[in-house]
Amino acid sequence: ACVVACSIENKTDFTINWRQVSTFNELKYPDLSVFHHSLACNHCDDPPCVRVCPTQATYRLPNGIVAMDYHRCIGCRFCMMGCPYGARSFNWMDPRPYIKEYNPEFPTRMRGVVEKCNFCGERLALGQEPACVEALKETGAIVFGDLNDPHSEISQILDQEHTIQRKPSLGTKPSVFYIV
Image (tube, rainbow, N blue to C red; front, side):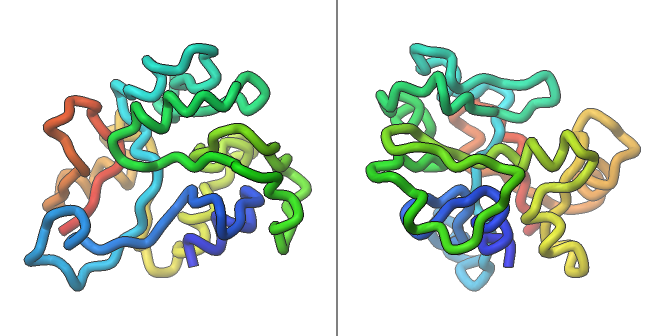
């Protein structure tokens, strides 16, 4: 449901994956291989994708979200090489003909640029939650919030639950946590 909601909200298709479903086995946790989870950009506190982008098309917002300016992207794919999480997709062709359902609030990107999850920045600007969070609201499978606010739901969950991050040893300081 979260992958479909993301695809509809952000006008992505089968060739572009902002959000994927994986298992912990693929993350090198063989004891938890039956646990399926959603993967997207980790919105790192120290994002290597930002450091390697020659045009500053990839940048980190004050709220911690790693964002992109698709009009500045020159398609060099340095950010793809810099991201240790495989969280970016390159538009090899015009995505517009493959998009089945359009969201008029979010423009489609063009051929020759890199894309990634932006936590639905346009929705956040309207006071809404990301589409993936909204799609799974009843299950509570994805929680979104301010990690710097100790009273936020996400901070309270992180205080109470055992969590892991993907590849923390790389020093990127990912802002996405998985409850195990």
